[in-house]
Amino acid sequence: MHKILRYPLQALNYTLFMLLVWYFSAAPPYAQLQPDQAVITVAFSHAGERREECRQLSREELEKLPPNMRAPMDCPRERSPVKVQLLLDGELLLEEVARAPGLYSDLGVDIYRTAKVPAGKHTLSVQMNDNMRVEGPTYTHEQTVTLEPAQLLVVNFNSETGSFIIQ
Image 1 (cartoon, helix red, strand yellow):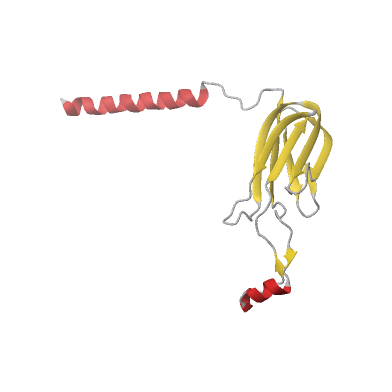
Image 2: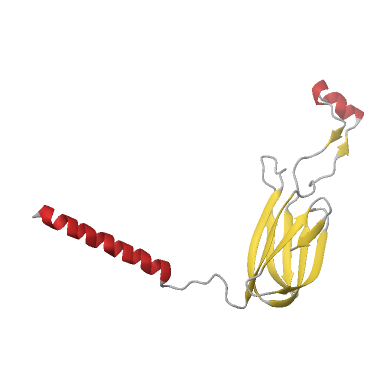
């Protein structure tokens, strides 16, 4: 009796499973964006400034150190956190404060944030502070952008030139 029912029940189970997979792959509609939305992505890597300035060691300080450790400059490795703000038409859209990773907090940070926004003409402003010794943003960029529906706008930062790139 078991062998007679085994194969038809197995076929029924496979059929039900395939119908379930077919239904969930086609039936419930899913849209990542509304028809009138666009996406703005902030994505870049950047190393903040050092938390403290390098300083020249005095003659007495150098003499206290072992001969193999007598570097004339003392430069702490720890870096400032990087704070990024993205404003759309004067309203805060994204804000990120990234602390430097690494054993000595001395590595660069990777920032990747995405926001859905209404399509149309907007004023986009990006501000970044990478030096905790400076009050306010150290880098700023403002640009008028026209976003089409389903468009992806990427905000990048070039550390060599110290400027934002909006593509």
